[in-house]
Length: 331
Image 1: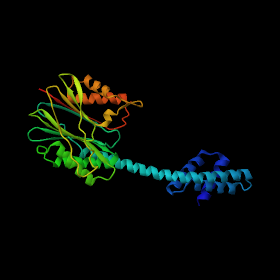
Image 2: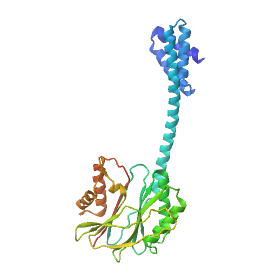
Image 3: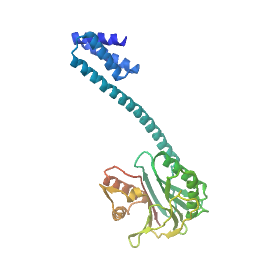
Image 4: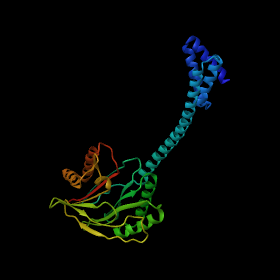
């Protein structure tokens, strides 16, 4: 049936070169697509129609049609595989969009207002799903806990892992547990619930507004920085510790840093320290110089301007998630 219809269309066009025949051929191809007829089957119909219309077709012409048919068979198989992969890709993209929206909702945290403390925070994902996370926990006495984490691994598993960290943090009484204890408890949660090969670096600090001091501990996270307003200089907040999830029973060291008016604590992930200009990593001194350039601004404006600066440096192509937090003591 299909052969006879196609043969009549082909004959009409070859004899009259009528545009109407081309239109009907277009309708034939659309109908064939709906009937799931492959390209090589269409070509076979064309060859059969040509042989019916021109039985004395030359040997070279017959061989060329056979050659084209073999080519189209391979093409049809590859095209079908491509369509299947494309459909799976679209499904995965849709799932990732849903997961990214869920991540944004589940990991949402508000920057708290703390008397005597100016806080700024920014976290930008390099891709749809972020492997960075920060969280603030404010207690009834107006003190605040600050967690900054980076999952070694990306995508949906990283997002689920961060959700687990957030809800574990929310379950701890922030005014009773110190940073080293929180990291120890989180390490148990991660080690028991996260698949092997996925680890988390984390910095956790607790700022006491009455003492104007930050107690902090680190689980293999990027070192924080301290800005001394009196000397206009920076120093590294060294705090070594094993990443979360390696071993069950691990203890962490705890440190304290007190702030005078104008002093700042700067917390970040390696997406900041490993920014690149071309193929070269940006030096830490350049990061500090950029922060200094915006010291006259509120903390939130500082982190946003620093991000925009390094976004431009990287030609608006982030290679890693970028998270930067500033705590500055004010009058």
